[in-house]
Length: 182
Image (cartoon, rainbow, N blue to C red; front, side, top):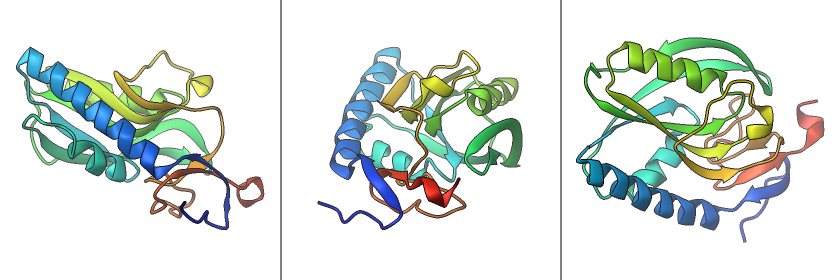
């Protein structure tokens, strides 16, 4: 058992479960895209999705390419819905099938704006794979095509998710102690 970081109230999703679910998602993604004869460009939304994309890619058995973009929509612990593009893609995506890799779908605002941006750049299709889904916070009807885990409305960190740039390196998803952010 992993030693729980002193700032973590409880482990929400352990490392073994993340790896097992990533294997399942990788298999499903591979089968779906292979059946359609497509090879997606994986687009990771920096920084939080990097550990998830790294784990997920190990289990995708079709050819894929990857690129990165950085967006910001959080202030403290809440999504404010004002999406800023901090780093754009390095290449044209005109006519490509995009698999957008996210750490968490929360309100849906950020992911909706990123999908619209990618479609405006000429993507043929944009599908979403998210490690976490928090539907109780949704303000826009936005659902990922592939979901690792559906979670309650708790402030989680680890496996890429952060609070003030800390805790991203935890190998699990944990609930941060309330007193640290309230």
